[in-house]
Length: 109
Image (cartoon, rainbow, N blue to C red):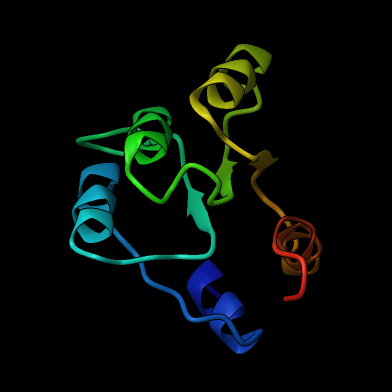
């Protein structure tokens, strides 16, 4: 099952974008997510640039941003943290573990 399917099955409304640039387009067009989950390695705008850009948008300073990536390098993690990532998760991750983390960053979910 895909991440989207698992999250929807768990009761979340999910909106996707195929890369960081398209995600920014959706956000600037009015999408207001409670949480953003991004990969790091994407075409057109990678996840680090996405995080940096999201953090500059009005109303997105405190929206949790989780990275879900194959990148386990500590330097990349630090780069993500400095860009404004809330958490760094390395694939593969069990959906039950992801849901626990989502509940930590979104109290009341």
